[in-house]
Image: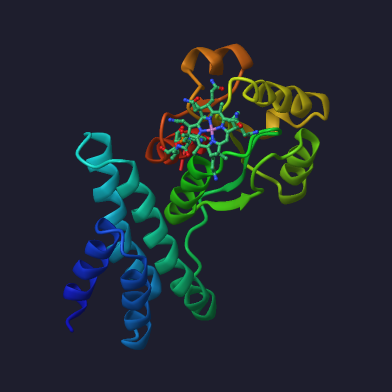
Length: 216
Ligand code: B1M
């Protein structure tokens, strides 16, 4: 198969949300000796961008976005070890410590945000769900995070986004790290109220916001 045709199929596999096919095409690229970075950027990212744009216009919906994210994850999982072997690490855009806040076990949106951020080139430390405030702050310190990103789906747990910002202030880290929040009940008004740096309604927007916050 021609490289250009392979790239088209890669993009299509993401648009179709076919994780197995995406992983298969990634393996094919490795066998053909294609630069894994090129396969990600010219093949799979084209598909992710397409799905993101369609989603933004209301022409694709959440299930398609979730499946595209999963397919992208499957492809990147095959290619990342190859990148490391070749020493062609992707340009790292910044370190993000991500979680769903304490008391909240909703994980789907948070995971989607993490997938999109790492597919774009951020190094994501996904701490999972129901993450205690100080555990998050400690992780941000340990890895030297550029961004602390918090998801909350409940009106009763979104207050912990504020608690984390206060804890970052208390330990003297607030000026060194950007804070991004999201989740269904989060609004721009809430962002202002708690003094966060950025907010997005969806995972595609989260990537844009993260890039803006770090100027990358
Ligand atoms: Co629950 N739940 N749930 N739930 N749940 C909601 C959130 C609820 C709105 C349903 C409802 O009543 N209509 C309601 C909250 C009401 C409120 O607080 N106002 C609710 C409730 C009440 C509860 C329980 C309390 C129910 C109970 O036990 N009585 C309980 C709480 C458990 C807990 O957390 N302690 C509970 C439990 C659960 C399940 C475990 C069953 C399950 C979660 C499974 C899982 O995650 N593994 C669940 C589900 C599935 C939902 C709904 C139906 C769907 C959530 C979801 O996954 N959406 C939800 C109703 C709804 O949202 N329509 C509901 C899909 C996901 C892709 O979207 O997470 O919004 P979302 O993420 C989006 C954006 O918000 C944004 O990008 C994502 C992608 O576009 N985003 C970010 C998210 N995080 C971001 C971070 C960013 C930026 C953008 O930057 C950092």
